[in-house]
Image (cartoon, rainbow, N blue to C red):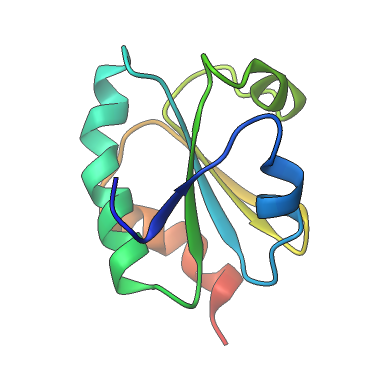
Length: 110
């Protein structure tokens, strides 16, 4: 885990994600999920390169089934960008940094 990525769970999700002043990209993942490990370095690049514009958080669906259920995360990896406490966009499946940014950039461009 890099210093630019926070870990969230069922207990602190509302405060750290929904209550955030900046958009939060949440990576829903699990240890056993091979595609999750493929997308993780791409998400880490986004966290480093866009620090200040977006917060990146990881949520382990095995450890936090309540939040995963609340947002109907049925397959992983799923990336959800939350802005102003609401879901702004959702990406399902492994993809590269550029493909992720194409979908999330419009939501945090100044």
